[in-house]
Every structure is written in C-alpha cells, then in structure tokens.
Length: 575
Image (cartoon, rainbow, N blue to C red; front, side):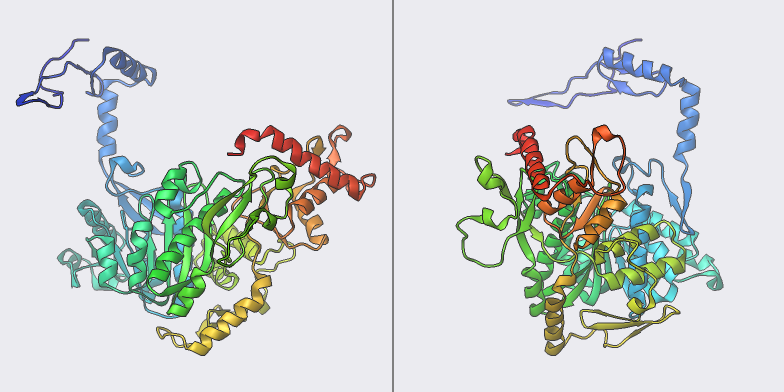
C-alpha cells in the first residue's frame, strides 16, 4: 500500500486574505474498486470488507459492467426500462421503487372508478421518473384516459419516451407526434401519451386536468396550490407523501415547518399523519375557493396516500375549512377528543376529555395537537366501486386492503359486512353525483359533469351530511396491546371485537395498525370490557366466557389502577 500525492484528490482551495492556496491532499487508491480514500485506517477497513466478501479486481469489474446495462422490469403487464441503481434515489435520475407497487395499484383503481363517471379523462402524472404509473393508465384504460407524464429531468424524459415505445404507445411531445414513433406500425399501437419536460407547478398552472397525481420525493405541500388552481370540478387529486420521518413524529420540527402542525408520537400516529396531510390539502383547496371530499386515506410503512374529490365554490370551501380542528390529547391514558367549535376561549379545556387524569395527576396532563382534519377519511361508495375495478382488472394484491378500508369506513366487523351486497351498490350519492351501479358493473351518471352544482344541490348535500353524521366512522383507534392489563391474558382480537359489538358499540379493525381497533367506545369502557374478558396469567389459557367473579366496581378499580401504574412508569413522557 503506497500513499499518493498526485492531483487525484485536490483539497478545496482556502482563501486567506488575498492569497489562494490549493494544496493537494495525500490519499490512497483501492486496488480492487479504484476508490480514493484519505485515511490509512479507513483504507485498511475498506480492503478488509472486499476480502470478507470474496471480491477481487476481476470480479468487481465484471459485476460493474453487468450492472451498467439497463434492466427491463415488468409490473402489471407493463414493461419498463430502468437504469443502474434504479432503487437508490441518490444515485439515479429515474427512481423506481418496487415497494410502491401497492400504491400504484390503489391509484389505478381510483382512476378506473373515476373513468366510469365520465370519459375521456385528462390525467397527469406530475413526477413521472420511469413513467410506470402513466404507462399503466394508458395501457389498461385505453381511450378512456388522455395521459400526460411530466418530469423536469431530461434523462427521465428520455427514459419515459423509451418505455412508451417499449409498450407500443405513441409519444406526443409539444402536441406533435415524435418522429421516432413513426417506426411503429399504427395498428400495433395502444394509445397516445404526451410527455412534457417542465416544472410541475408551471404545468398545472397552464393546463386543466380531471385527475392529478402528485408523488414528489418527500413532502408535496409545495405543489398543492398549483394542483387545485386548474383542476376541474368533481375531479380527483391524489397526493403521495413519503416524508414519513416528519409525519410519523420523528422530526417534529420538520412537520411544524412543512405542515404548520404540532404533533407528538402517539399510539394512533399513522392516522394522525393522514389527517395532517388531509388538512394541508384542504387548506390549499380553500385558498382556491374549492372544497374537498376525502375518498380515502392510506398510511402504510413507506408512504401516506390521500385521495380527494374537488368541489368548486366558496360554500364548499367554507364547509371544508370548518372541518379543520385542533385535537386534545391526554399524555397519561392517551384519550383524545377534537376541540368544540366556537371562537370563545374555554376556561378549562380539560373538561372536554372523557378521562379524569387532570384531576388525579399533578401538573398539565394534556397537549394540543394539530390543526387536523376532523371529518371522515373514507367514502364507502367509492371504495366499493374501486373493489369492483380491482376485480375487473385482476389486481389481487390490492383487494385485501380495499376490503379492509370498506369495513373501516362502515365501522363494522368483517363478519357483519357484505361487500358484494347488491343493495349497497345499486344507488350511491357522492356530493350530488348520483351513481347507479348494476350487476354488470356499468355506471350511469344522473348529473351533468363539468358543471357547477346549483345552490339547491349544495344545500341538500349539506343537510344530508348533517343527518348522516352518526354514520361517519369514529376518529382514531386503540391498540389492544397498548392498553393491556398487567397480569392478565388478553382475549383473541376477533373475540374482543365481538364483545365490543355485543356491548352496543361500533367496532372494526383498521389498516393503520394490525392490532388496532376503531370504535366509538370511550377508553374507560374499552378497558373495562378488555378486563372483563381477560383471564389471570396464572390460570394459563384463554377462557371461553367472561370472568364471573369480577364485579363492575372491581373492574373499574382495576382499570383506574392500571392507568395509574402506567402513568407512574411513563412519567418521563409527560413533556
């Protein structure tokens, strides 16, 4: 190992007064991969890693030449060409994440359901990268959609054009057919795709679309104002946010900077993240005199997806703005409730919480989170239409998730909810749009599309929303493991759902947490029923029925003692 003093690794010039000194730094070269390393100890460790992996110079050269060639991947009968290091965003211009396959299928089902209302639809994939999403739209939906794929990077635009030709799709650039597409036979093409290269904000200001999908690398708040500026009435805007470190309360200062929200890590942090994104979308729509209806919101490990329908008019914008509220969260028992409407300052906001932690614990026990979206996160009718489209196109991976969303929107256990019931699908109303779905999955629209809703229609919709307020699913959920009783064996999750349902509460599972339960039961009742159907640890097993020897007073005392024990154990989490 020899040290090198050549001009291979120059040090950044330092300016001292008027003298500029650019000295050369001593460094080492790896004999296997030709990497340049400054420190000798780092070089030794680098070479040892090559030795442990069994890599030699010849093997490394062969592997690097093999990876330099572009690969062709296939997803949902769509072929795409990707470059080297396609799954590492720091090393490629056209990022492709195979883990986002579920996200792409959900968005495809959303667009397919919208295409049954009116066609043709002008759709925009604002951040194309490889163009996989727009290619799937054009290839499977055909003439029902007019797809525009945009990207600011020149290499990504070139790759999108190659992938269009790979899937026998014509490329239109600046409203003129690209000359390279003339080599394809006209009979073998499936449709036209317009590929643009400009900033997404500029494109959305210049053109109007029926469907807009935003999937930037990170937060999407910088593009929401432009998306709602020219989106058509009753159109759909889908937003995918991948800045989960801020949304999941790992970087709270970033969430305050991007979304203007105060958040902490809670047991329902994923739904909290979804409501933060919906609140940001609602504020952007209200600034453009538009309202929104949330069709569904999904928060999984890698992303938060929010899909909303756009409703034009200041009345809809005002109704949307009223649904953005603050949340009061108790840090001792994790009970939560949205603040009451009104401008008057309340003397004791702790009275709004169902728990009595403030009276029994010293100091301040609750914090204010938000602002958040306080209304429903799901539209049952639209989700059922999405399920029909997933069955029609053979998307098996996304069907379990959509079914869970349907159960969650109705807040009904799976045993009591029938997804394929024709009575539920015969007639649906979504903000004045009456949709009749027959057995052959054909859809008739009874309202004129593209026109603004009349004042009578808006008033009738508002009245119906007030009468159906009881049908909206309860906000947030409880984790059964988080509220387990010390020294007790919990019942099975399905059995506990049945017990809550028999007690007269609405209950369902949630996609946000595999062990989460969405219910309208207060936390005290939740813990009381959980203790009633639990068995002591020393009995060694689950019992078929409730504990007969435990009275109502004993149950309440045990629940309060468990809350106090957890409060003492987690005293450091108060602030």
